[in-house]
Length: 329
Ligand code: STX
Image (cartoon, rainbow, N blue to C red):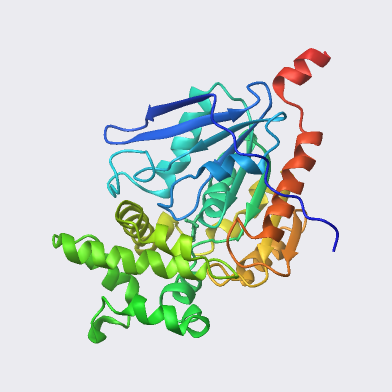
């Protein structure tokens, strides 16, 4: 195999801020890379997973203006773990508010896992604002995807980790784990809420990478991360992503068919199995589709990094930044 591309070196943002998006919510954002580069916005996973500094590193910082933000209720956004005024369509609106606040006309949209869900929802709502899409670990919140990961399916591959996931839920309620977890994650018993949040979050932290990552499992079990991640994920799942129909994102792919796109999917993704990416690919053959044969779900898998960086490099060459095209006139 030829040598794989790696992440760009760590960088710090040249500006950060907090944008008031509703009476209740403020969202944290940061801008890194080249202030005159091609704008790119990153949609993080979960929902509720928050952004990480490594998200800046999937883009050439000399060519891109990289915008990373924390979605409502997680990371450095406030109030922490808040579920009110927190829906897919609120987040889509926030991306537009952020774009206008930063004076950006159009941008590349980059997202993995729930970040792919949100990127698709945003692009289908505002296709004229999207220069290109780079999507990984495709997730569309359909009932069968939620059932696979939180009810039965992934449990066959990780029966050991599954024992810890089922522990907080009494036998009588195990026919519907999402509902049973939702009750505890939104209940008044703070100790029960935290115990449920940790079990929920550690299940995901344990199963997202091809090879075990004890550091990830530990960080997913941290109180603040687990509370936001588990509460927000469960809230979105019990509300079926706030979509009108189960297959909405794939059914509406016609709205974004002409946007240049790359879809990167790990063959051994246990969290968002390849069936969904395959169905998106069949509905949208115009998008470049890459299966990484030795990867699971995580953005940090070496083969996933290679193809994501290759995709952003390709788009950096083909998309001109506003400043560059003005200079060329
Ligand atoms: N949740 C899938 C998802 O978006 C069902 C996701 N899983 N883990 C993550 O995101 C992070 C590692 C990005 C937190």
